[in-house]
Length: 308
Image (cartoon, rainbow, N blue to C red):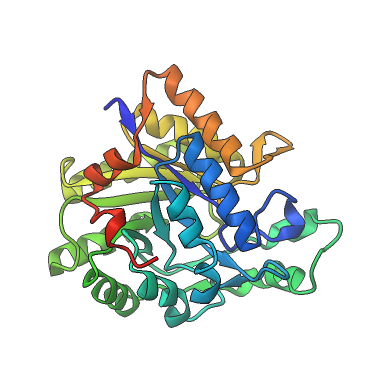
């Protein structure tokens, strides 16, 4: 495969503003960085929302409504709205924006995990906002809830609008959960699998784990039944994406996954990470897929059928 889909996860919900001045918070910052990432070569933009005044994660569709139309008017990139939201949100809060805007693509987490990032608190010298420290430190007690009932509810709610999913699998068991929903007919072949490595509580960022996840997916689904991509947290980002590309997978970068561009150097923007992985892919003889090519690969409904 010569064409590789580059996804960019622009802001996420785990990192807080005190960790990096480059992390986009306001609707204007999220829109600006998303558009720049698309211009740099990202075919898919994975989007969360934050409260403009302090960067707190939010599922409020009104906040999404301040940047989604701006992005759509400026770029043809596929918009991928989170249904993961934040680990402090209810499922209904996580789903609200996707229900209103009916995007082409949504993330869908395929199982519950302990989702923790509390060690990062000890590296922050000063906090910009009062909510941040407790949010980070209390993640030692967070469960990222994605029960079978939750997953079925999301699939049934959004599939009616023609939305397809980026199925995020944080561990091997999540692949079997995905197989379960495939057997039930709630997911159909041609799905998009995102393998996630290096989250504390999920599968570790070891190269052997990437091979095992891919082999397990091939055994469960068959090589031709799905498209697959890889994201890896923090310092593992670029090495893991390089390995994924060597194996024929797609890749995801973005400040949601890593705030750095190289060891000890904070990234200046999401676009900088897109540009870096694009250079790495070029050295291997790959080209970034265009949004139109990504839509064809993933069987998406098209940007003219969303409601923003």
